[in-house]
Image (cartoon, rainbow, N blue to C red; front, side, top):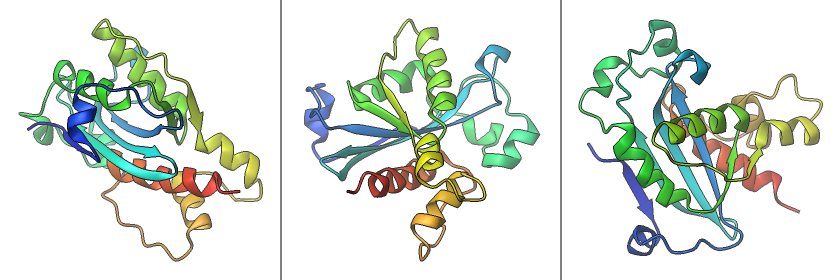
Length: 189
């Protein structure tokens, strides 16, 4: 199965045109563990492209990294070994993802985690990921210091109290969509 790429101008994105100066790509990854240094791998990427304050595209793919998903980790995001059979490999997904993000600023909730894993995966393929990144977790800690915690769910429901939670466990595209809404809300004047 190929990654899902939905963009306003898919043909333009396919040729890798330069992104607008104010383009951010909100990212989320699901992994087989907590540390790429311990051999853990990215098994799902979700991303939402934002230009001029509006969502203009999405990217989502499961990834068969060739490693088992521990049961304890499956309980967090719901991704099983069986779900990864027949999915694209990192060699197939990451070049497409690189074209999607282009030179954009990356945004994530706990960006250090997501970017560390993506840099590791990119390096395995001899690719770089020099993109600057911003963190909605750190931003929420500064702007919303009275919250009981700053998990994605807590921040999301604080900013959108009437929103229903429409997501599958901890899946990458759903989390990227939630983070994108948080980012846009926190960037309002």
